[in-house]
Length: 224
Image (cartoon, rainbow, N blue to C red):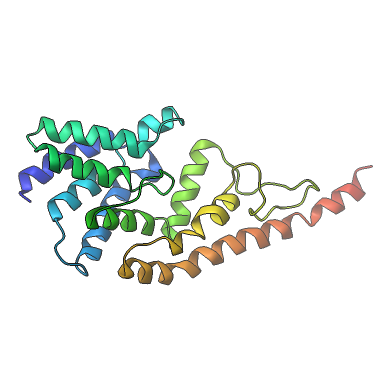
């Protein structure tokens, strides 16, 4: 991939990024992770991989403004139009589009190329471990989701049965389950190394919140 080509694609990506949890540093981490994973594979088209990694989240702003939209679908279409405008042939522009379409965990699209699988794995690796926890909290703070919620009896809910969004619900329903969703062995190994860090944070939140709430009974005794 020529440097000039990389730079104009990178510049377009930078013009699209506004979400703090899916910012330019997330994009660079995904790109670097994908290239590292690609070293363990054969016959990877690195031009496609690099381009798809750079552009995989360019639809985030539209999804944030309208949650009914899927950023992977929006981003895929934007990437295709951008690449065609800059002289890419239709088949390779569609290849990048399909990588972007299938990178989202909840999109319903399945990665059908090695490059798409590498992007998927790299993007999901950035949801694991300490960075995954930090990114989740950044995003949930932006949209106003609480750290935890209370169950019907007013006690701390651990997330598995939560009806409303919270960090604990996101951890139980997505973050903890992501470790079984990788396509490449290299990504699975890296994810397992990070898993305990995330689990300890979640368990610490639950433990400390429950400790704090012990004083609720004292308040009930004090206020009559």
